[in-house]
Length: 381
Ligand code: CAA
Image 1 (cartoon, rainbow, N blue to C red):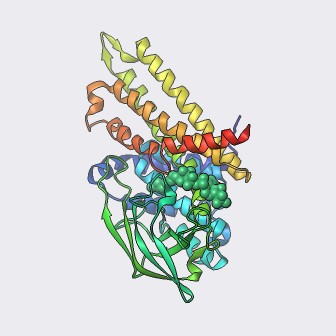
Image 2 (cartoon, helix red, strand yellow):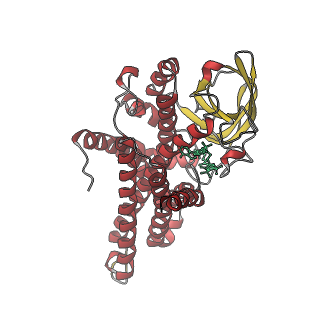
Image 3 (cartoon, rainbow, N blue to C red):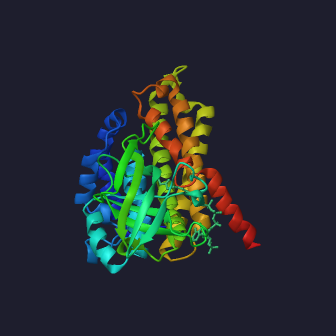
């Protein structure tokens, strides 16, 4: 049984209060206008939340894995866009923390604490689930590398988002995933880097997701994260953590949807009684609450394993798979409970239903998570 410690409970309370008082009232407008929620990120920065995973040496508060999940859950209950911006930012800071040189940490981690957002650039038009199929190339030129290629669907990348970019590129095309890729840490103001089309999305509309174009993008060897050839593994280890974050986002969305459904079911009267009195609907609520609880426990377990430095690949994939599916199940039934009103934009459940859908897709589809889980299960026995 997981019990939160006092520090975790404190952060959970603080972020919950901020989310309910400041983030929730903006969520509808942010979605409608597909607007980057600058005020939320500024507020979270002032509260120290953007650097919660970063050591005090760099200005952060050095909290544990589960605390990050609690933050993302509280934000996602009211605004999934804000939650994913923070999640991807944590993913990038974690990569810098684990793989960066002292100079990279000293440069980028204080910026991350100040709310300057990091972006993780792996996906390409021909390399989605098959992340090994990427074509972006980094060619050595003296002490530098020249990078050419295009990334797509990059979160925290757009007119307002993206200060530093972890870019995975081929340095030895023959070897591909097995040592052929390298991770580079690139500044936004690099003249070889430009932001392409910003996507018009179904949900999480406040999170900017764009193309990143690299044209003769020159970086020095100092920009390499880890070693030449480590890129694919760095991406996969980063995604192990990122998947726990997306599972947290899914738990938050499902939790917000369950709360909305219960409130509505108690208020809405049909056939002379609140619809919450109907057994069919009570059974919906029971199934929703059970899946939500199971998803939350998987998130807590994955965070705990990662905190203890254990291999987390399988449990992170399970958490992401289960929580993403649960979020879609819960928001679907919550919308059903709202009936015709749930289909209208006047009710938050319409947005939650759209926001939930991406949690089965990004940071590895549900099908990719099943690949990861089954490979590990087959190797285990
Ligand atoms: N940790 C450490 N190393 C790992 C690893 C992990 N989790 N997973 C794989 N590796 C290593 C392997 O051990 C192997 O190492 P060796 O070369 O030493 O043998 C190497 O990486 C290659 O592994 P595989 O042969 O398993 O690679 P694969 O080509 O079969 O791919 C895959 C595996 C799991 C399907 C992977 O391609 C994958 O995860 N695809 C999904 C990509 C994804 O999640 N994209 C999300 C984009 S980011 C995003 O969505 C952010 C956002 O917007 C919010």
